[in-house]
Image 1: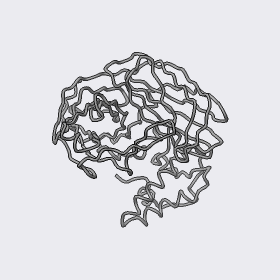
Image 2: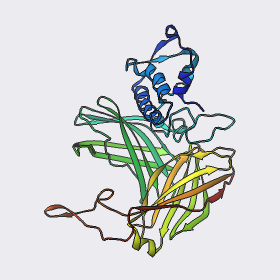
Image 3: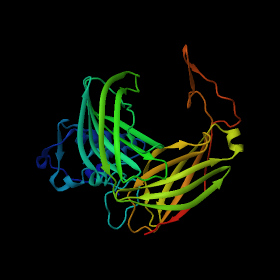
Image 4: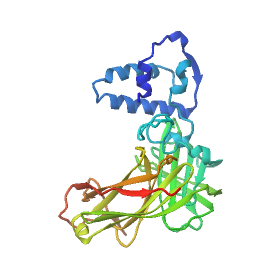
Length: 380
């Protein structure tokens, strides 16, 4: 399927037929980000000149307006909400999923806005304003979006994660992106690793500092949020899928389905032989269904159990095709060594931080391999 830039190239354009349309800051930011990705990607191909010509139509515009060609305005990918801003690929186009007969728009966060609660709770401290925009909870995983306004540069601001009452073991991930001068948007997830499922999430998000990871500057303040969310409808399917090879075993214990996505929960175990040779083991799950759809997803983090090699984690994928009857899960394994380029270990002493040398192991660089497919029949 052609992307938006190829569609623009195919048009016979009369500049008198353009009309200006006001757009918000999110839409401007997404256009800039999409342009950069497309130009960089096309430069690697022989057809890059064609792409840049089409892209220049938008580059030459004022940053406060967006030109819309009336007959094709519906094809231009703009941001509808913060969830979609952080979506995989370009909103409105199939990037990671096979086109089906319905030709529906897709993406990991495509339906999150629809099922979320609009909160718009704002706290301000030390010249920084933080707003929780929308949030959704499926019984095990909380996903929320936020906006930050600050007179200081925050980079990809690091912020502490929320806590959910009654949730003892959880993983989480977060992203922050600058969309304009002094303005940022972010998304985060907190996922329960335990078997426990909650009907209502009582959430406390106490932020006492924001750190800029680029220059390690810290802004201290007092941003405290407290709110509750009812869980969306969801169904948990228990599974016993296992794949094992070269001393690494991946077990799929359960899958949680909700109206906007599904989450796969897995365990990673390794043998003593692997532990003695390699410093770390990473598992990446690739998922497709029996219709040919390939699902994009985001890691929710995980919890290490009796050793650093035994991990319980989860990963959330985009909405399941309702016509699918099977999921084919392919675990991709990476064995790696830790060195100064990819790992740093420190010990806090009275004199400050002290770097710790890791014990030498025979495994060098990395080794990659793929386990056999784990096929899960979906319970309807």
